Length: 154
Image 1 (tube, rainbow, N blue to C red):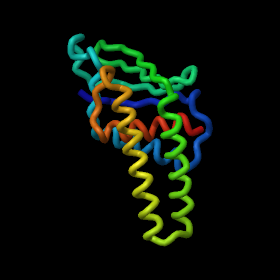
Image 2 (tube, rainbow, N blue to C red):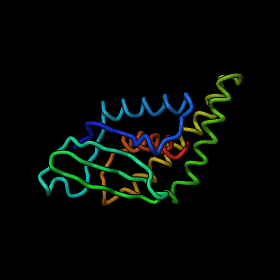
Image 3 (cartoon, rainbow, N blue to C red):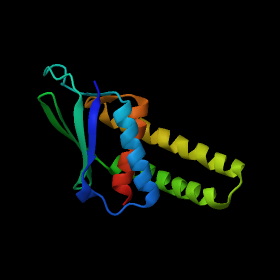
Image 4 (cartoon, helix red, strand yellow):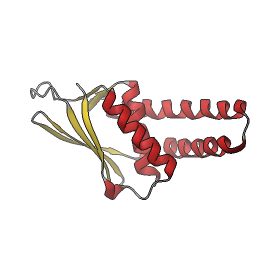
């Protein structure tokens, strides 16, 4: 099963920086091109997908609003477990963007390796928090983590 579309609640977003807006657009494009997204109970309900996903923030919770093939489900996740990871990811991204301006290629590569490592940890945390609710693969989780960062960052 897979996602056909992804929408981010504009009311949840503040004006993003150019880098965040670019990351968000790339993540959405990549997710639509290739993803693995199986909501719990969809198969039993006869819903084979594809699904539409709307991401939003409500009362300090991340909202996954899923619909498609006669299937509708809203999943809420507390942001608390993500706060430290998102803060670390923001800090290392800022270092990376600063490094792109005046650091050596070796310094940029080192920071980028750290950035990818934190991004992977965030994706693993997301996969863990969605366990039993939505089955996703690692690449789908990474791209969703990017979108969550765009939501929470602003």
